[in-house]
Amino acid sequence: MDTIASLFSFITTPVSWVIVQFHKVYGAIFGPDTGWAWGLSIVSLVILIRICLIPLFVKQIKSTRAMQTLQPEMKKIQERYKNDKQRQSEEMMKLYKETGTNPLSSCLPILAQSPFFFALYHVLNGIANNDTIGVINESLLASAQKAHIFGAPLAAKFTDSAADVSALDASLTTVRIVTAVMIVMMSASQFFTQRQLMTKNVDTTVKTPFMQQQKMLMYVFPVMFAVFGINFPVGVLVYWLTTNVWTMGQQMYVIRNNPTPGSKAQAAYLERLTNHVTHHGKVRRRSEKTIVKAIVAKGRDRNEFERKFINALSKAGLAAQTDGTVIKSESQAAAQAEDGTPTTGGTGTPKRQQPKRQSKSQRQSGAVGAGTAKPAGEPTSLSKSDDEPEDAQPAPAKKAAQKQQPGAGTRSKAQSGQRKGPQRPKSPSKK
Image (cartoon, rainbow, N blue to C red; front, side, top):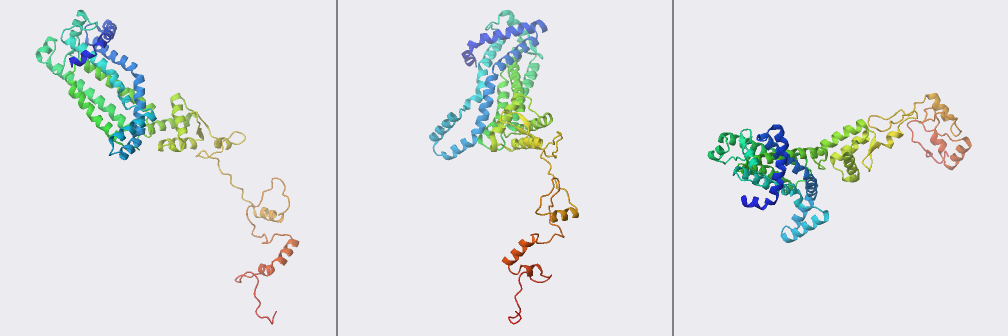
């Protein structure tokens, strides 16, 4: 490990300088030789590093989502060229190049933190071995050796012997209890971080080997932290516990406000967004406008949760626009009366106007006046009156129609139980 740490010795001096600057601030508050001053200096170092790594974290999220989107295409390539590994690799690289996806982007935050981790380990190891390193001189070295976090020295390890721990003015039992608790917390935070990613922010409609790999890592990473954690000084455990908690909180924020499409987190997010938009009638934040804009642009390619969101807006009389805003729909506006009173039903669509029922006298008067112009405002008969004659044509037109159609008069006089139409004569003699 010393060989690996020496490779990152170029960053040891900057890391030690940052720790010393934070120690000056916290030392003035809690005392220069206290564990609070040195412990909070390490925590502040982690926070500073993670703030600088936020752009890489954003890139990691985009890369992870892009990889999830490409999983169906990757699976097709694997099945198509399962007997030709070289061609399979070429097609995979071609797919990455066309989509602008880099599989290594998801590992960027971890890789970027590695130099700082080894530099901090080298600094704390120097404190345990009574060696000055970086900008930490002899006075700071003596102060750091006196610092205890919950009774455990800053440079003590779980695997240290009783003699080594006694040299740091501490008890072996206390050191092992504190380090064991910190290792468990570190592993638990790593497990919870990976678990919330798999259970809430993964598209459940896509079943690919990538999901199985992520599920396996959910159990592998905590075990790795537990195995290697017994060889880390207390200060390094503070570092990793802090960075795990930061990652967990950062991921919770991203999952809540910018979930993966098709995931359970998106369903919960769109439900909250629907309640807000239907209550206030508008989108409040720029990030929400971006998500609404993306949903509108998908069109028929929307998933189940996105279609439910659009339908909920429609039922509330609202419509999502291509720029991400939400306005009152045209059907809602058309359903308002001239005085501005809405006439829509519970579903946001205009109520159907039912025709008024006419009396028998109105229907008769409408039948008598057929063919003539009706006064304005007089209702028109919607159904045929019971007393209305079957043939409403004028007399001259009726006679002309009877001449053209023989037997029409006979057909009109057909009695009940007889066949309608012209009757065949019984015998030629009677004719």
